[in-house]
Length: 229
Length: 296
Image 1: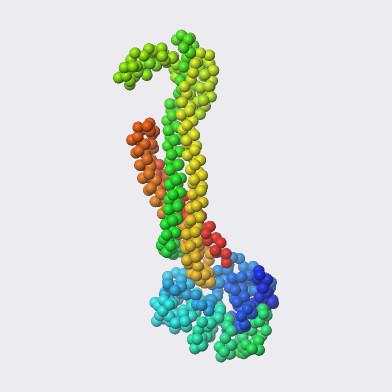
Image 2 (image 1 turned 120 degrees about the vertical axis):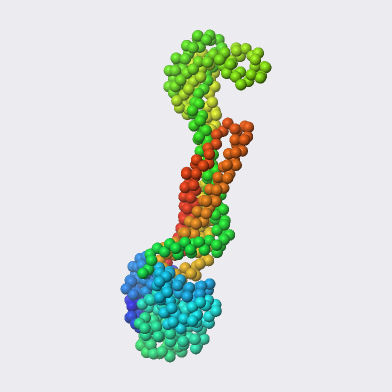
């Protein structure tokens, strides 16, 4: 669960990125976070992942209060999150399997855990036949599936996808979004940051719209109208 | 169940990282070798000088010459005065005849000496002291006694040894400090390079929730391995250099008086110090390098 209570964020250079955000995302939800560039979407993601600290307000992420989290607890908090980026961020010199193994090793998983978990996750994203390929040998859509598998492999409570379809063509984008929907149906909370309104409008999900650091609409089954917002 | 401390992983990561930027690793090892070699060489010189100083102390004696106008009986009277001086442990009177015999001994073939009268030498006392460091003060006191014409103390030799040893120690300390800083800097840069090379992997590890210590350990292991390699190479080189120099000293005419301690007898002390210093440089260098990278 994520809970923003009247959160402000002002960067060192004086940019006021968030101006009083109140947002609650419950376990099991599927939420689109939409808004134009510079509206504060990335700031929200960075606050959730603990990359930056908030200026004012309260923020809870999966039971951790980020107001007074100790540096030692930040890694533990991050283990409750699976993060997906627009540019995939895979390790090119490792195979698909090794990329997933790397993520599991990073939190101290044993070889037995790896052997049990990785084939299951690869099957879930439909890449069980391509475990030995290198990222360079895969299409963009497949690479993003690997990134999703990596985000899932440590069994997080929540998946955060930051512009996951930004580098993909429309049909691949739709596939990725459907995969995220499927993952949500299996019980994982999903937060997707995007500005692709066509894609958002194809799914009847909760849409949180943000502009100039404020939430301007929050509707379930919402409709994202870029022009109106 | 998740393992807390996967030493096999840290070693394999650290080991492979050394070879992904081999030149920097090589430079780092070379610097550690240079640092340890210089430290070791100066220390070994100091240890040997100390040892020779010890030999010198075993022969801690000097001569006091009696005024030529004194008869042998008068000269013998001075003995008690000398014995009264603190730090004097033993006084032996040597007549000029005995002294000449000593002098001639081993020089039988020299015809010039055969005709030399005993009178060219003076009666003398052979004086042993307890503490060679006070040799100068003691000899000056002896000099003040009426009837003593001159003293011939080897304190300049003793002091020369002390001086050389102190210089060796001082130079070694300064050089080691400087080289240690340079070594730390190079190790730190090697590790920084390793860190930079793997920055994307590290970002991913952090994103997945890896702890800082998990990220840090492979780099510390890398620094340790570099330090250890440097220490072992330096140790073997030190051994070779020591043997070569030792052999040269023993074979040379001028320096053959010097006694050289065998290297084998010092391995027990040298090897642990080298390994300890190498590990210290390696670990501190890598810790310094990654400290600032790991802040959130």
